Picture (cartoon, rainbow, N blue to C red):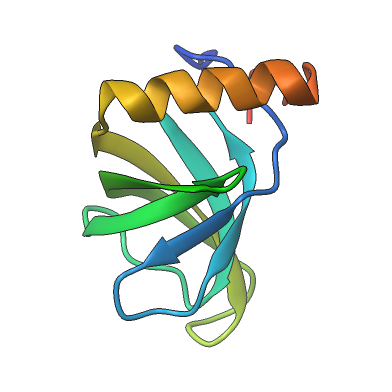
Length: 111
């Protein structure tokens, strides 16, 4: 049985812009990271830099891909999880404000 997450994730669809790639959309977000869908997900261990659109703001982050789930091969849409390795205090504050405005749409703890 999988262990529960350290931080709860909330089902928010936010735009993520990664350097040199088309925008992707989050499936869920927490203060520790996010899960998103994309064509040809990045490999676990890949460091990434980008920004997340929260309201009218683009909030920069640095992170690392920690897991990937592909449907059926290399060229199929998949889902991946990112752990933030560096975010600013402003990032955390804006994300908390956004979450309060949107309400609590918790994602299952064991995902």
